[in-house]
Image (cartoon, helix red, strand yellow):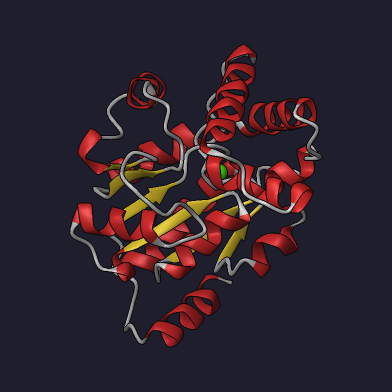
Amino acid sequence: MYPQAIEQYLAKHGYDKINLKAVLFDMDGVLFNSMPNHASSWHKVMERMGFGLSEQEAYMHEGRTGADTINIISRRERGHDATDEEIKAIYAAKSEEFNKCPPAERMPGAWEVLQKIKADGLTRMVVTGSGQVSLLDRLNKNFPGIFQKELMVTAFDIKYGKPNPDPYLMALEKAGLQPNEAIVIENAPLGVQAGVAAGIFTIAVNTGPLPDQVLWDAGANLLFPSMPAFNEEWETLRRATTE
Ligand code: CA
């Protein structure tokens, strides 16, 4: 399965091999089990505003910036973009709703695989559309010794969020890497699209309610059913991408 997926990637991009130096992790739905809270918060707030957005649809928008999500729904339901004031108000209400939820736990398997990746001497990066100010504190508390501030890409760094490749291109730039020197770990279709568009071998981990096919259709090079499954397969994957 891996050799075939890797061969296809190499042929498409004209590389001889994946020369793995860094693993680029999305955050929500990959490192933290935070997506159920995000999806229910979006649903509640949008309904209150008179917009239709099911929890299932919220998962399809996962990875977008808040403003992009709000405008897509506004255009669909009213035929025009939301005003800046509306975007601010809706996003603030969504954040308030989200903050009422119990704090999301670490995704099972995430800590285990990150320790292996660190022990293998590979760089760990976080690439997220999230703009929470306390992000780094939270990462350091839950994943001590794993991530560094200089090697993170957040909503503050980028103009065009996922599914644009920019967040992942910026990650490569920050770490001084070529696309074939990294792999991306993503759980959402738009995140997978962003990794693929940046020319990086992109692994989907399906931790949510969407069918696998949505992630394959987004262009995933490989798919695992869960983070523990990714952790189980790490050694095989590492050998296939570093030797
Ligand atoms: Ca995600």
